[in-house]
Amino acid sequence: MSGGDWTIPQDWSTYTAEEHDVWNTLFARQSEMLPGRASEAFLRGLDVLRLSKPGIPDFEELSERLRTLTGWSVVAVPGLVPDDVFFDHMANRRFVAGNFIRRADQLDYLQEPDVFHDVFGHVPMLADPVFADYLAAYGRGGQRAGNLGVLKKLARLYWYTVEFGLVEEAGALRIYGSGIVSSRAESVFALDDPSPNRIAFDLKRVMQTDYRIDDFQQTYFVIPSFEELLRITVETDFAPIYDELEGQPDLAVETVLPADRLFTRGTQAYAREKAAA
Ligand code: PHE
Ligand code: FE
Image (cartoon, rainbow, N blue to C red):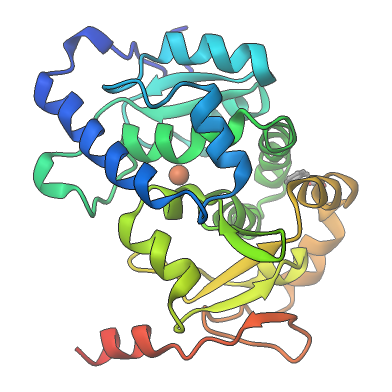
């Protein structure tokens, strides 16, 4: 692929030994942390995609496995791409991934998604047939929302599911959002810290709620299952919700509403201490 779709060759052979080492270090510490914390679907994805093979994955090899499982493939891009390009790839089951990796002195924090966030964080869930359908449907929903000029609302659904989602499994909370599973600190914070709210997923509520991009989330939303997430998002026509939300104020990140079904009412102590520092 080339031309207007923003994809570039991954150039797998040009990664240095140090770059592969950064992947291996991040992989070792996250995979040690995740059993019992990450969703079974995520853990299964790591396994069936053989992501434990040392070194930064070769997208061609990875895509071959993924294509067989769910029809998805992974394509390289230099960094963030325009929304319409992103949604077009997604609707066609191509996941765009940064091909660069963070430096060894940036293991815990970076601004732009790199290959560890994109591949370790996102791709295991794409091996799950239900989640794979959800993300492809989201791509089509993104094209529609772009035309309607309401991307900000839809982006919150992505944020609070694909990036920072929690799921209830066998009576306990598990993480599946890529931003959590790829972060050593947040994979503990999201489940164990008393600070954030953990609220049952509600589509309209999520699309009304701001999020923060600079620190741990102050609220996480919990889906009952991936089947239910897929069902509700595919069966619901979002256009009337966009219209309804148009006239309503956005909800601040820490908001708890009387109608919310709470798993945890957060103390917000972490955010308060951060703000005071
Ligand atoms: N049903 C949504 C719409 O009417 C499309 C969508 C599906 C969006 C799945 C996100 C996820 O726009
Ligand atoms: Fe991401």
